[in-house]
Image 1 (cartoon, rainbow, N blue to C red):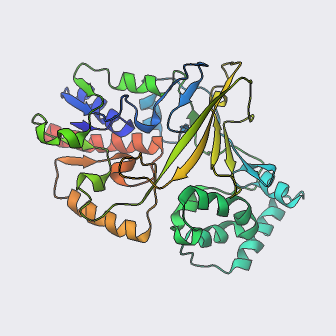
Image 2: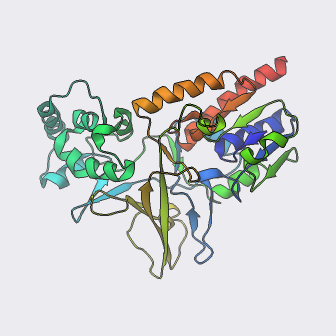
Image 3: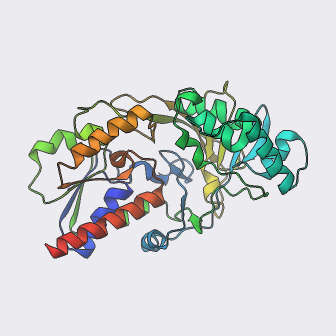
Amino acid sequence: MVVGAGFYGSVMAERFANELGWKVVVLEKRNHIGGNCWSCPDPETGIEVHEYGPHIFHTSHEQGWKYLNRFTKFNNYRHTVWATRKGKVYPLPFGLAAINLLLGRRLSPDEARAWVAEEVRKTGIADPKNLEEKALSLIGRPLYEAFVKEYNEKHWGMKPTELPAYIITRLPIRYTYNVGYYNDRWEGIPIDGYGAIFKKLLEHPNIEVRLNTDYFSVRNSLPPHDLLIYTGPIDRFFDYKHGRLGWRSVRFEKQVLDIKDFQGTSVMNECDGDVPYTRTHEFKHFTPELKFDRTVIFREYSFAPGLDDDLYYPVRTNEDVARHAKYLAEAATVPHVIFGGRLGAYAYLDMENTVSTALDKYADLRRGAVAG
């Protein structure tokens, strides 16, 4: 039994069905497969839209790259992120272009490195305890105040001093004019969209997919099964007995515009605190090889989720980590259940992490199944 038809569950289902010949039932509470990675053509424009926000596949792990290339081909898209701050536009992540635009100067790589080092030294932070201190210890106050502070307050709904330090380590700093967001060997968007990948992953005759099926509504009436792959929230599985884990969710406001190009790029971060949304996405830029006369944009708003809302970003405060440890102890008591994916692991996992961890876990389970 597989709960959830995102990448973790779908990869597991495909492997067990294709390689071991097991029968697999996939339960998906939504009306489509693919989880948050689902994409499909917009009915008005034909532009491939990522319904739950942008997903760019990038990896340096050959195993996952080769595996997914069995089910799709990728275009040559290379992700860039731009940020608006006080009416000006800057490239992210932090690099020579952002630094020099912010300062109105032309620093060399060594000069920029020295400037950042001096700004970091001024903070006097040697052992950062939260997001703000971590950011200041990495980039100093000017860059932090311009691009990090207000944006993260909107995104997380908390003051940066209340957030864990690990969050900011995802944003690199460079001393070149390279504005590519990722440093991975492979990167791209599937040319037929993410929906096509999941259809191929789950098309084996041994796989039965049940859409519009909430596991918790049918858990007491499931057919006998040897293994349960669970990719929902781990705290929900145990009926929140140790309390709810902290998450943030997002919602999107969609617009179809009768213009060819709205912002000239796929993602624009909104770093000003008085702008209510965090990002603007324009999906046609993910497939520059295709031409469209109209465009589709999503404005992204962050909020604290209720019980029935989709979960996107684990907050992982110290209290959350301690609570999660209790759920991991509970998970150890049900060895026939495998918890995976972003929700099951309570971890921020990119797509490549999710695919790789699913393949690795399957390899472990396969060895046990063959030995058994």
